[in-house]
Image (cartoon, rainbow, N blue to C red):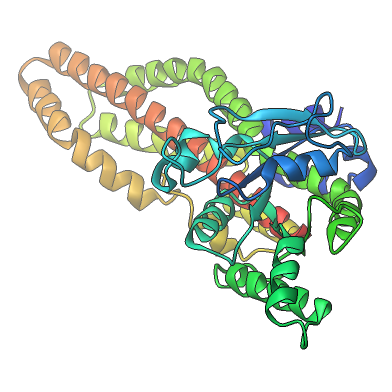
Length: 389
């Protein structure tokens, strides 16, 4: 029902109401939404073992993810989380292998289809991890960084420095190394967990499960917000298609006015007709100045942040005048010259020019405003997502 209200508000150009509809929903209302979590990282880092540990399974158990020294996975594998409702865990092939080199990894696996990420690393924070962090941030999505195989590191440290061995100090050093690496990519408060998949009751593993469970409603809300631009795009395109049928009527009316044998009437009719409908489109889609100010206030953004993504013709008469002068000025001169010699032919030329020019300019105007609406709404939804991080 809430999604239907969002769609109706977008179609009617009430973008502020569309955002308000999402803002007013309690977190519990997002529990019915699913959350696809992608487990990614370098080959051999323990991605599959982490999934098994999160599901309470061991390697070899029925339904467990396949583990091994060699990464033979070619396709992502999906596993339901038996504890967290509506959560699916996707075991992705390792990054940086022969089959999935770093440069093409994100594109080949289409990371945009996943809503949340857990990056797994078995060594210090590396360039592969940084690349994944940048890509996830570019998509506006969230992630945890999990440093696996803590037991191996602790055993090695115990053997090398038995006299000065301090488990908590070593774990904290590992956490800080990972946090510095993640923070260097522009992440404000990185979520880092040091775990051992062999010992799911030790180190940060219980904290990882608890954090994921606690944040699940907000993560589902974030995923829901990420899905809305695609929903809005379909609604805006539907409205654009519906309005196209009105363009011919407007163009035909201006054609009849332009056929009046009065010098300059064709140009003036085209100009004022275009200007009127330009304003109407901005108002109808909810991206006129007043609506943009209200929307900016709704999401706590300066209005210039919303107008910066708009690339359409603009709403000022001078812009419309310039465009008309460039596109039909010469044709109007021919038409008015013809009036002096062949009045009937001149009227036909004037009307024809007005018809074709108005039709194509209004279509271009409609498409531009519709595209702007999608960009503005995406920007507003992005601001709303950032407000809840």
